[in-house]
Image (cartoon, rainbow, N blue to C red):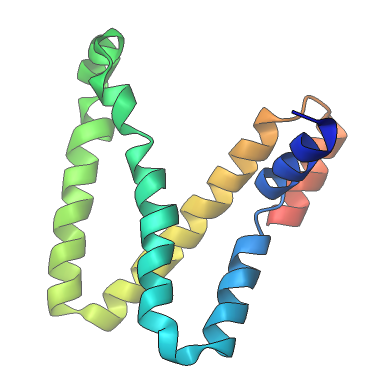
Length: 133
């Protein structure tokens, strides 16, 4: 691979703001395709993001860690799923607000964590944190 390709790829990971911009442009330019946009966004971003964790659970080398952290890794996700089902069914507007706030928190922390993987320079890490937040 050439260096120019790696730089472009790195910048998309380092500055993921491009994805909401693309989403917004498509949403406002083609409002009749909103359902398809949501579907493909979930299909290509959300599900692949979620599916990336399954190899961790399937690798037998992680069994002891999973058993020791059962509450965080198994029980809490099940409780969140139950809350989401009931929240969506019984108090949808409030649930969507809570879900949106939790999503913002999750994505922001995750973006900062990914940026920290690519740098060892404290000044750059602080800069990235300020830009993300």
